[in-house]
Structure formats: C-alpha cells, structure tokens
Image (cartoon, rainbow, N blue to C red; front, top):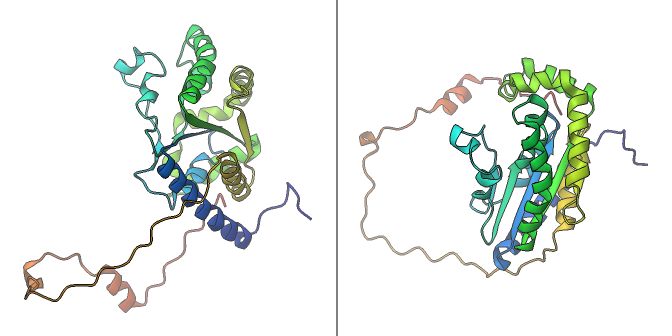
Amino acid sequence: MSSKSSKMSKDLYEAELLRLQAELVEMQAWIQSTDKRLVVIFEGRDAAGKGGAIKRVTEYLSPRVAQVVALPAPTERQRTQWYFQRYIEHLPAAGEIRLFDRSWYNRAGVERVMGYCTTEEHRRFLRQCPIFERMLMEDGIMLRKYWFSVSDAEQEKRFKSRLTDPMRRWKLSPTDLESLTKWEEYSRAKDEMFVHTDIPEARWNVVESEDKKKARINMIAHLLESVPYEHVKRPELKLPKRPDSTGYQRTDRKLQFEVPDYAGELMDKGAKVSRYDDPEG
C-alpha cells in the first residue's frame, strides 16, 4: 500500500525514471517535428530540489533543443529595462524547449522578501505577470509552472549537509542562509504570488519534495501528461559501408602531446576509491 510519507526505493525510482526519460525523448522529437515551443518554470524555496529535477529532465535530451536558463543577478543596465525584457530573449523558437531554473518570479520571491525591489515594482509585477503569460500562450508557447514545496525542517537539514559537502557547497550563498530566518516572509510572498498568478490558463503545479526521488518522478510524469505529444516515426538509418583505404597513414604518436594515462596508473596501483554518497538522497 502506497503512502505519501514512505520513501521511494532506489530500484523502483531508477527504473521508472529511465522509462520517463525515454518518454521525454519522444516528447522532444514531437516538439521538434511540429515546431512547438515549450517553457517549463521551476520555482520554490532554496534546497527544494529544483536543480536535481531539471538535471533528470535534461539528462538524455539534446542541449540544442532543451536548454536550461539560469540567469545571474541583473546588470545595472538591465535594472533600467522593463522587468520581463531580459527573460524574453531566452524564450524558445520553433522546435525548442526552455527550462527556467528560477524565472521572472524572482520578483515575487527573493526580490520582494530581501528588499531588492520597491513595493511599487512588486505590485506592478503582480499586475503584469498574468498579462505577460497570457501573451506567451496566445502566441502558441506551452507554459508549465512548477513550485517545489519543502518543509522548514527538511530545508534546514539540506542546508546543513551542504555546509560540509564539498560537491554541493557552491550551492549555498548568504542569501540562501538568510532565507532560514525569513521563512514566514517567504511563505507570505509565495501566497500572495499564487493569488495573482495562479491563473486558469497557467496554473501553479505544486510538487511535494520532502522525498526528492518522488518529487522528480511526480514532476516529470505530470509534465509528460500535460503535453499532448505523440510518438513520431523516425526515418530508418543505416551505417554506410566504409570505403577502401587510399593509403592514409596516421601521424607518428611521438609527434603528439597525449594526456597522461592517469586511469592506467590507478589500475596498476589497485587503487580503491571511496564512492560519493549524496547526503540529500
């Protein structure tokens, strides 16, 4: 019997993830063949699992088709532009997918809570955002919005693991750590954002992410279900017969600068390398 509180086994997770990733490849082929455009927004609290989900979505997709958009802080010039302007240039063309690792909703979250925007700028965003998104959809862009939800206890646990995890330490910033002291402020900002931007044409899809494995499976399955893709018949490919040699001789290896055989040295030494275990699951 399934339970929301139970953890997903690694074997079941990996098997189902691979199946869903194969379907993502099929969805990509359909988007390319039909010149569709897809935008997927990933939002949520820090350490809620957005990055891990994006990584699993894009793992087997073409980087020419499916690209991740993770913009840095705006420049001084960009601060003087219309707020949505710097995001527009990253929207997909025909046959493309764009995955926003945080998006224009920065204004409703971190900018609002941390005081990086004025009250009037925040209010203007809440008025304009539904209009902006309706314009995207009227032009034919498929828009999907996901909010990754995590408890304060789980967020703090993940932050603590990142403090000592050399593979994830880069993910922490002073702003991330300060979010621990502003839990309720972020909650109020998120609630207000939902009131104004959870519109019928572009609903917020909430992903419970206490268990990252479940969150990834649930999010990808929902995305596939929401996109009306069909399996595209692809042309059969055949390897051509290699032509006979015309006398080419390879350049003497001594004239090339080769990378040292570090892997071979490890094998000769019989080195035992400890495996990295992801502390966040």
